[in-house]
Image (cartoon, rainbow over all chains, first blue to last red; front, side, top):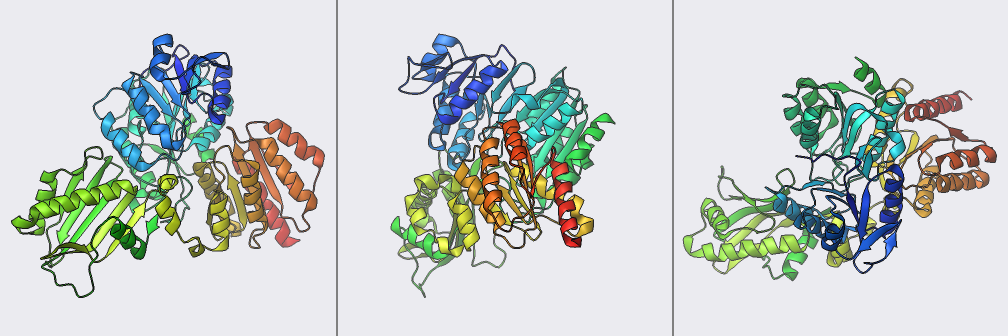
Length: 285
Length: 308
């Protein structure tokens, strides 16, 4: 279960003093995110953007009561940061880091089985609750409050589509980026379940792409949903067998192609569109 | 990332595994493979006896924290019809293979065949794939990579960490993010179908791309003779739009033969970027305010170029 995320959620930034950590801490604070501190081993006692820095997550949580964290730590230490968050009781962890080795993620996932904390990512842009908070790197200006739930593997494509939704008068309850990697924490199904049970969400926009079977699993869940799902799957013209950018985006067989996924989603009643320009009209139906 | 047979065998041998000599006597020819199962977040070990025309295949799911259990190796041995007095050896071999797989960040490892004879297990043929994300901690593998296998364009792309795939069309593409880059290609295919226009390439410059990478990507597109027009779609995040505009302006001031370029920029310093482009007032640079707008404009420019 993804816990409630809102303007009151206290957030720690793991890796607050790095280039990305520092830039995005500033962006999150400007948006109104309730950041209560950061962790950089060796910089405990210093300050960043007006927030206290701690050497360890343990001391950070003891001092601030944080329940969520966002990780801007290089790939070689990213899963260590996640283990630290899990072992110290953080309930919602956003891992922005791209390039985390698969072996590390397999071990992490095996460890997370039957454990409470929800991990978003790695290689995730995080969540945006328009008008309330953003945990991660989603540009705040693309969103506006409303009742559409948005879930996506691709980050910048989610920004593009969310921006279109906002311009078209369809605000969002939450935008959640599950990230582009093959082995991840929160999946489409977890996000869909959250949206299905969320009184503030009326319709869902699901953004998929080639590679893997996450959209197929999503389709199985959508079959039992009551709320409408509009789906766009990118990579229709991607050549098969070729990796398109991030590690997860490769069409290795028929079932990981855009066409197959579109058909699977269509067959369970999702409204599948062939281009991003068709999303607004589909929502208006 | 695939590792060829020669290098796979060399890596195995370096870790103490026996390689089969040609013409080795053997009692068993076995298929044994390890692979990542990303859907179930575990390793899958698959095996069958290659001496049978219709062999029974066995599959075991291995916990990535615990590694292969002895009981799992025993189960496999049974299916492979390995004699009971060789099971201990097989368990040791499986555990060693599991350690090798982990140590090299392999994503798949296939031996076909693995031979068993009186002296033990020896590997006659093997292929593996390794995780590109882990190359930073695999100096041995990096040392064995043959960069000359790629063509020059791909080498430049790899050097600058540009995710680049050559396609067949006429519109050069640059975007920040794989999904956005793929959507650009799909949109071009849709709008350009009637005119026989499609994307020339996929290019994802990644998040927070610095000037050097953007410059390299732009050079790549400008120097491709099959490209008639370029679209750059950058949306949001840490990527500096004004730095991007600076690079483009610089190129379009100097370049003799330029291709029309359509810019769609949103995000950090995007407004400043647009101001810079407008005041530079250079021929060949066009501005769009949406992805499909950029695509339609690029297609129109090519059509105009064809009739000119």
